[in-house]
Image (cartoon, rainbow, N blue to C red):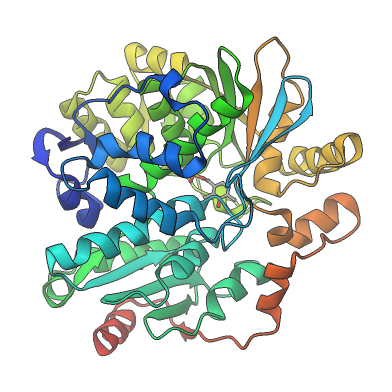
Length: 455
Ligand SMILES: *Cc1c(COP(=O)(O)O)cnc(C)c1O
């Protein structure tokens, strides 16, 4: 399998090249030249790990043997606290929840980042490189990355979070990790400020010459292929002819993985996207208008995003894999902060996805209603999807994704239900440990010198 960029479809890169590069130098995102097809019947009765091998191997087969991939996958999921890894529970007829919070940091980010870190460890000696992982987080990605990369040889990890703007559980999951290769940086600013610093350092030639910088956010293709697995898994657990999914979305990574599963032969009938009040995806798909607004803070902070990086991958597909039109779209969009898609792209988007923008009040009400009616406690991100699930009818199964454990967002749960969630034992342990982080002013040069001193 070779890879192209959404902004240059003539590229022909190997999996290891795109693994470390993350983002293409032309500004585009990597995609495979074609979609491998899987025979669903051959996947029945496999464990989660066995299924993962079959789903992922076509994308890495040139570089990684099935045997080696098995070791990487077994290592990635061995610390998950549920034997099914991603269990499916039913709350009502044809209404299901796919639970993705059994990894070490209790959000679905673990399913991809554990795999990514083991892939890096596997590929690093072969590439004889020392890595500096640099990323910004609004909470879940940072903690998942820190727990995935802690103690790894030849990899240093710098994670920026906005000072005093992540939940206490999220912060403690990051700052109580004491391994020498982990650096927690609290920036006096908001999440956009953190992302801006990261982007500036990625194009800093001086820094690039001194170390090999790597991105671990969901623009990295390896993260998306790990997420494809649980869509196949949910279908195989439910065992109907066709299936529908509801996916709470921010950066469009998770729901794009669902569409990849569909391209590989999974019989998905409908994909429904739930956004919060930051509704650029809703507007892009339902009206064809991609317009950048100011990010508002909501009860689902991991979805507080205006420009969804992975949406570019979908636009590439919806334009008939035409990298010239992608270059045109993003040139115009960065000039005007707005772009209206032509009818062909708009029709294709609507044939793939339906959307709902869910308000804060609706999120709170969904948490309350699902608890009262079904005795199920959902985190606020999951609740945006459940708001949609409550209204769905028909003969096909609807599966809504549970993206994080409710205890990560205790304040919102208490607001919705009147009582704080019970902390699972593995989460309460973070409250006994000492924290370690460096608080920095919102300035890229200070961070750059800190990185250079520590690598
Ligand atoms: C990251 C995250 C999301 C958004 O997922 P995308 O892949 O960015 O669309 C939703 N909920 C939670 C809890 C998350 O951590």
